[in-house]
Image (tube, rainbow, N blue to C red; front, side, top):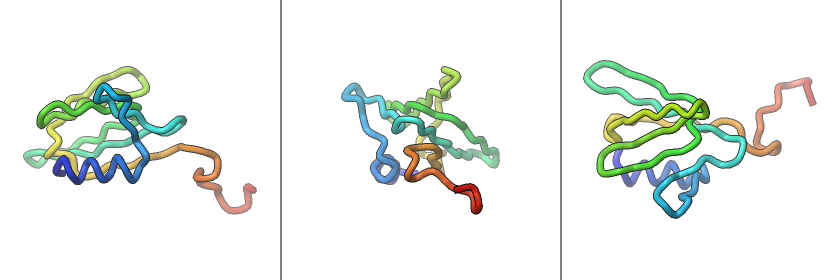
Length: 94
């Protein structure tokens, strides 16, 4: 993923910068990063904050773990949680 593509995803997911280059997920939301390189893949779940420095992406999880990933290796992001209006409501459970 290019930096421009990544910025578009952040915008679409309403992930905003705190002003110091740290991008924070919306309240009660977390991000999942999917990356692959050299035939191996990994997913980083429950990411609450992201910082980009050069070609590296640093992802901090809700468990305060930090992962460093080459931004070019990231191929997809997902977001879950959020406000009550956007939360998934299974059929028959109001």
